Length: 89
Image (tube, rainbow, N blue to C red; front, top):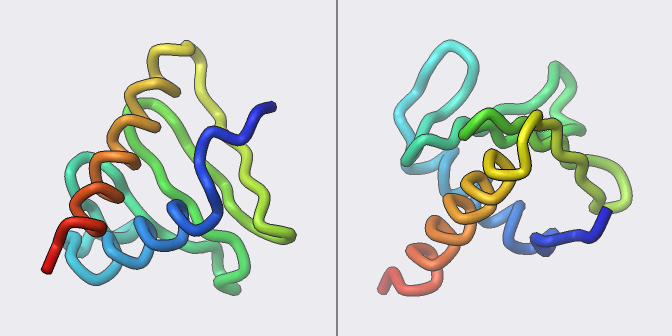
């Protein structure tokens, strides 16, 4: 699988959602993306648009989805949040 998102982007978006998102039982929700970790905190997850991203060891990630459009929408949301991060004073 071609990596469409950099590790830096994934980690900065995860952190931003954790700091600015609304707290829910599963994690933090921001603009349709939920950020949470597994029980030990070694694996982080971003979920939204029918996609679950698992990011872990060696700065690699895996996307679970059923349709390519879901992946496209998910990546667009991640990139939109990253754009907000980069342009916040």
